[in-house]
Amino acid sequence: MSLPTHVRLVEVGPRDGLQNEKQPISVADKVRLVDDLSDAGLSYIEVGSFVSPKWVPQMAGSREVFAGIQQRPGVTYAALTPNMKGFEAALEAGVKEVAVFAAASEAFSQKNINCSIGESLQRFLPLLDAARQQGIRVRGYVSCVLGCPYDGFITPEQVARVARDLFAMGCYEVSLGDTIGTGTAGDTRRLIEVVARDIPRDKLAGHFHDTYGQALANIYASLLEGVGVFDSSVAGLGGCPYAKGATGNVATEDVLYLLNGLGIATDIDLDRLIAAGQRICTVLGKSSGSRVARARLGCA
Ligand SMILES: CC(C)(COP(=O)([O-])OP(=O)([O-])OC[C@H]1O[C@@H](n2cnc3c(N)ncnc32)[C@H](O)[C@@H]1OP(=O)([O-])[O-])[C@@H](O)C(=O)NCCC(=O)NCCSC(=O)C[C@@](C)(O)CC(=O)[O-]
Image 1 (cartoon, helix red, strand yellow):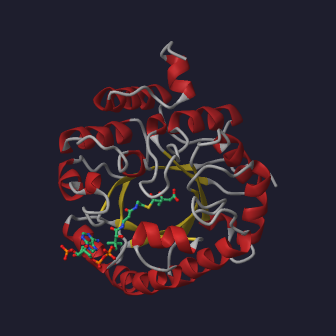
Image 2: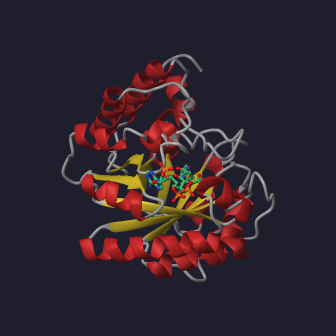
């Protein structure tokens, strides 16, 4: 299979990247991050989540962040919504695209959203119905596709069942999340092969955490399998509050460098992206998780 000529990057830094940060981050800093990312050319930005503030306190200000950002034409600003309550809050905040999130592992589903996989899918049904009526697009996530922090090994067939259900329910795209970053390129190819029996490859996305340093290899493997959408996080920020020890998503800067090297178009400006990452890293008081940013800034 030949490589795609264009790839869409879904920037999850403001959501996945920040949700696990313990220190308070001001709405102004979050707004600045989102605006910096759209300035850099990102066309899809996950801005926040409408989840319980008791579960993920850092996302409590998502409504204010949506109110503060400059919404540029052609850019999708999305939010996670686990249930109808979250969906309604997102609508009130003017959100035009949302994502629901399920897991391939029962234990992770319980820890993350306090219900079984089956119950989570039932919860999403009215949300997807309401979204259809309102003309809101819904993206679907499946977590733990290449391993679970509680259940360990996950088969591609387990993932395929949940992905197929999300797609059949009306999610226009399903993002396959290697939540704990243990997957390898071989695992990734086998996973896509199995999931693609039910879902067209151009409706799949890859979401790779870089815990074991395999994320770029897994993205390359996914490209070879015909997947052309990847989630990434500026400066490699992040981690999941319900997956202890998991590091951030693959850094957007590093993915962009890979894609540029393959001659795959993205319309993203690497220098501006690095600057956006540096600014938020300064706010957080940490160094960038992007190898490319560190090399370019002379601090590799
Ligand atoms: C799903 C629930 C709400 C269930 O949590 P629950 O406790 O079972 O919910 P409940 O319906 O029993 O309600 C309990 C309380 O939460 C409130 N509540 C209920 N829903 C909402 C809402 N939407 N927004 C705000 N508040 C809400 C509700 O009003 C009530 O408030 P109280 O009466 O106690 O004051 C909870 O477990 C939750 O919020 N979980 C979110 C976890 C999360 O955000 N995890 C990180 C995102 S997933 C991820 O990072 C993985 C991903 C996507 O990146 C891919 C990958 O890497 O794998």
